Length: 179
Image 1 (tube, one colour):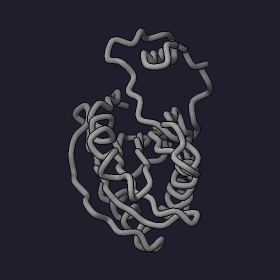
Image 2 (cartoon, one colour):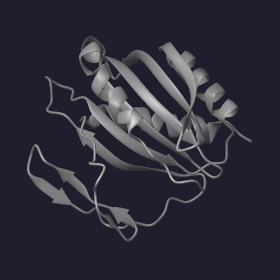
Image 3 (cartoon, helix red, strand yellow):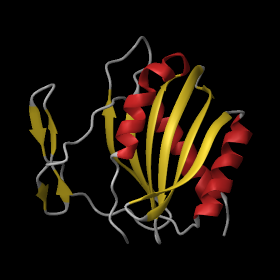
Image 4 (cartoon, one colour):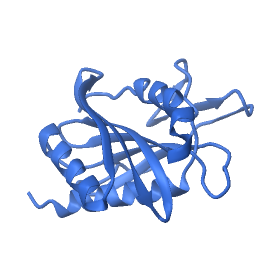
């Protein structure tokens, strides 16, 4: 299997992460609508059901949702969930991600194998420079049979300690249906 699509998918994810921002968690009691869900934000006082878009095709990816915090200068912390439609083993996904981080010159602080909704998952904590900014990422990749659900929380490196607990709480709330 060629590695280029995996690297392109991650590069796109990291680039998109620069423009996204937030640390909001959907409530556990959100109503489910056909083909999607409903997001309720009690801090800002609104509820919205996103449109039902086509499902991502094999070999492609989609950023399914992004939550953003208020900007802090030129950057805003963010949490996004991407679906990467590809068949890959957890071991290969780990190798590709570590290879990408090494090539980019980023420091991998922690990698941990775990489970999410009974499925293999990988937790990543890494930092590095992108777009002239020093960033820190906390990520959780759930590897399913035909895709990877990747939740990533991105902060400025200098704000990582401030956001770490909230980012990890959001990542721990991730649930994914088996496929």
